[in-house]
Length: 148
Image (cartoon, rainbow, N blue to C red; front, side, top):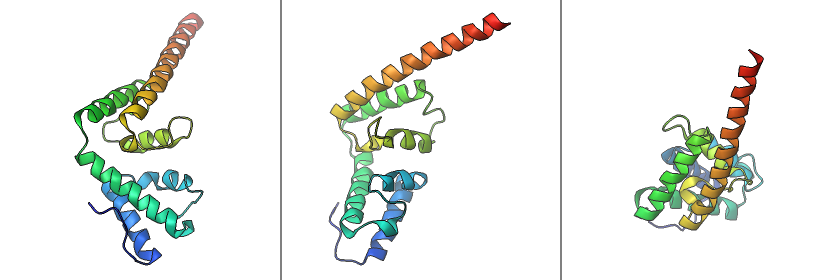
């Protein structure tokens, strides 16, 4: 797959961005992706930024189809942990997952953009979040029982 964008005008590049977002199922997360570039719309992106975004989206498309087994395993582990955290509650509903992942405090990238090492770091964070959630849920349940 050719990752370089040929000489084309910015309008054509914006169309490509939207097509790639659609193919990736990330249209709902466009604002979150653009936030990383300090923009609210693709019209605010510089030529270099839009080229970078196109490259990033094309990589994402490629990584979905050609990911090695170890990478797929770590992604699966991350999804399991995201489910325990209550983020990935509905299969195929990526909007909440993408929004969560793009938060700078979590990792600032989409799941398919992460390497194995980054997924390992993410998994540690998610385990911690899941443990805190479980503890808070137990306390909430105990408090509601005591009130009755």
